[in-house]
Image (cartoon, rainbow, N blue to C red):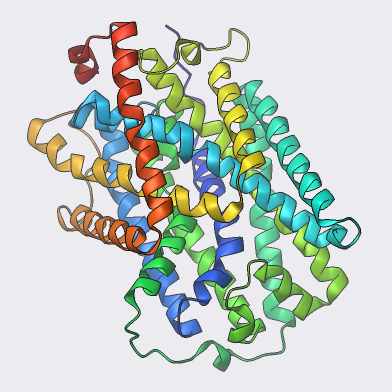
Length: 450
């Protein structure tokens, strides 16, 4: 069976990381996070801590992805290190939640910023506005699904352009904000006393970690990365550090531009920032630009997800037609189409807030288990023994695991309905696994040796 070629260089791999991480999260969660913390100092500290935790995960995945340098991410790691069932559940969750839902979230965020910048919401009735936003979101998903269906070169070309535009626009927005704002640095200070509301603190960190999700993106396309032992670790670490720097600077700009009580609970907080600094017309124009920044994230999700379904289908643990590589475009085109269809369903029937909460809980589980698998891989000598080793082993993976468990507990206490729905979605994959196993007659021992 044909396998995808190694065509992704270091620059493109870093671009995939940046595009996956800088998405709808930071642009809609900053104000919500501020509403749960007592001062700007707390918010900035949490963004720094979140970045360091993401960096711990990136360091761990440097070993996993070079020990098993094939596409599929957690599906491959958990199948080899634990059991094919866990690998299947990670891929099942990626299909239902991990990629299709963020594609929908990015598309919804795009339409929200576009409509806000154009002031269309004041022209039509609320019902018509909702329909128009949904239609724009669906159209965006369809467009980029078609682009990535037509091949990795076309997809990477479009992807790199949008990443470049994203970086240039973000730098331009930040520079304009810092040059033109008329506040002073004293404003970002504030009460740094410890609060007893640990649940609110945990929820704030949960939203921050969702915004940092995507730090492991290149592991899903590891089989298509040139010189994986060099480019995978560098892309994971460099991409994560770049995004961490952007997030801290963007939040600094928020708190230097607006009073803290005007930030707390605000969803479209960056529109308010630039309206305050540059005036209503320019601020609304920049709101439209922010909407287009979300397009690169949507594009990256559409690029990466199908590689997981393709890997699963080759093992007989997903729909067989997902394993097919297009004879002309040389990509898992059927998987691209399946993912796009499911993303459209999420767009039509979900809100962005529901997606974020549901997404985080489901996405937190499998990277934690994959990092636990590092200890098993070393003990049993699984994978390439010339791998890049985790810096700071075993402290780095242990810290990542502890933090992941803590957030899972906090999330369940604070958001029991969404957390239960995420767990139910994962568990629904168990009977699906055994049904597929029976009808495809896959040898489980073969999967363990892959």
